[in-house]
Image (cartoon, rainbow, N blue to C red; front, top):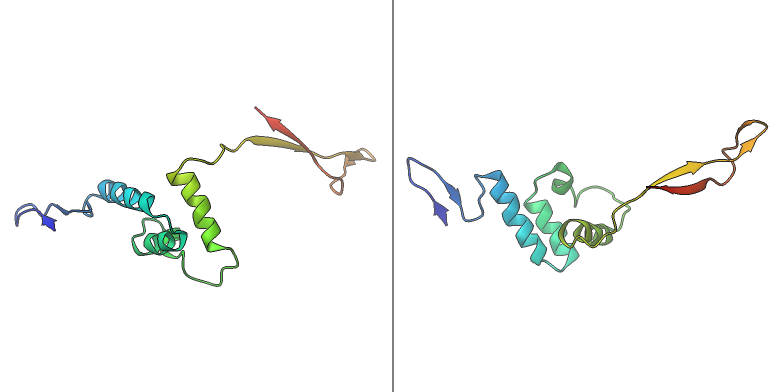
Amino acid sequence: MWFGTPDNPGFDERGVVDEARAKAYYQAEWAKIKDPSKLMKDKAEYCFTPEDAFILEGDNHFDQEKLVEQLQAIELHKTVEKPRCIRLSWGLKDGEVDRDSKPKCEFVE
């Protein structure tokens, strides 16, 4: 359904003329989708970024469904732990950094 008049074109029920409303509409719709492959197809069809537009293209060796599940966890469900910074430090060998040694990882607060 299209809302508007000849003088004021308005927008459709998805808010397509207003990009912010359109994004909000699709985010709400995508939050309802439980099937990762359907979500991936929907994001490719109604995309807002180049990454979404080409999500189904190419010889990709990544598991697309797992990537979509991770994206859902981050964007929709907010269930992913916030990343923490770490500091990597290598040992010394003959006064220089020994890059062949296993690095020591320390979390930085």
